[in-house]
Length: 124
Image (cartoon, rainbow, N blue to C red; front, side):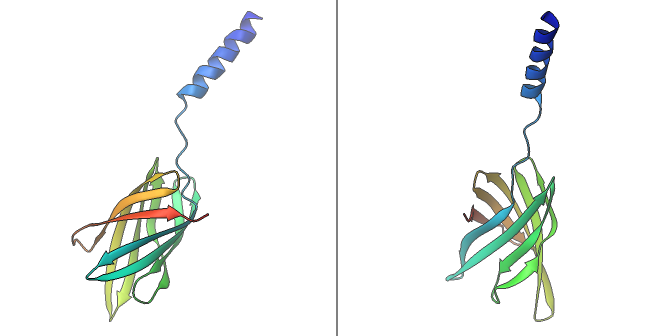
């Protein structure tokens, strides 16, 4: 009996000490940004497997799907890049954010320019 109680206590302590699972970023996320007097809607479709993310970004002037690159999640931190081409010029936007429940709050930086804040909501 004592041994059974000791094992139960060890299991409970180990369970409490185990690291928290990474947040789940899988889903469709939407947000709106405004700049230069224009408003644009953006959509991010993510699939998470462990700490790896895959997906597409839908937005920009042509509102086309662009695969995300270098995407990952570490704890509650999400990061990914979107590279688009316009008039023969490539531009990469780096996104980082913090995932909490159904919201990602973050910043984006495009080719070293000033960062912009973004807040995405998971669609139900």
